[in-house]
Amino acid sequence: PALPPATRPEVATDVAVAHWTGAGRVFACGAGASGRLGTGDEENRPVPTLVPLPGPAAALSAGGDHSIVTIAADACVPLAGAVLTFGNGLIGALGHGSKHHCLKPTVVLGLGHEPAAACVAAGTGQSLAATTMADGAPPSPADAVRGRGFRCVFVWGIGGA
Image (cartoon, rainbow, N blue to C red; front, side, top):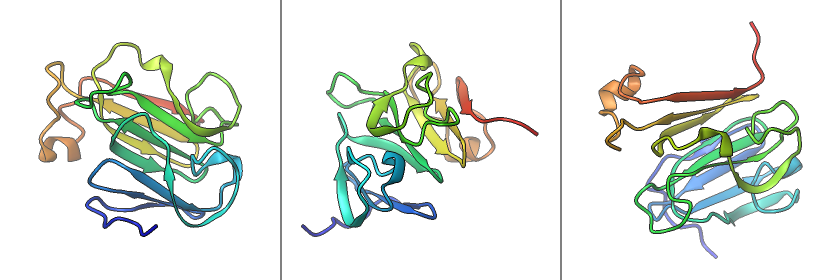
């Protein structure tokens, strides 16, 4: 099947590309080692393949060996607003409390009852989720660029100076 036109920018790493559509669907292609594509296996995917999610994606970021996605808070699904990660878990970047790889998107449970994540970021060995304001409204674009307007910022994974 043909890949739908992108309405959001593509997110790329050195081994994988994620394509996020206006309908909240995520497609991934590239090297599948450690489950970094989120397709349920470790197969390389030369063509974009739909990543199974429990609802429409609202935010997405791909790191070197893992990815993080948040489900739209206004979606009529049980996991609305949830943050999910998948890929290489050896250095804690998935936030699941283990060092196991996740081959498919898995909920990060340690975020508690905070409002839905407004943005997410995946680094080489770290993940970040920033929640909306207490009323659920996202920060303005100008505030977001300056790191203001978020209720809580959660960071996990490898650290060091």
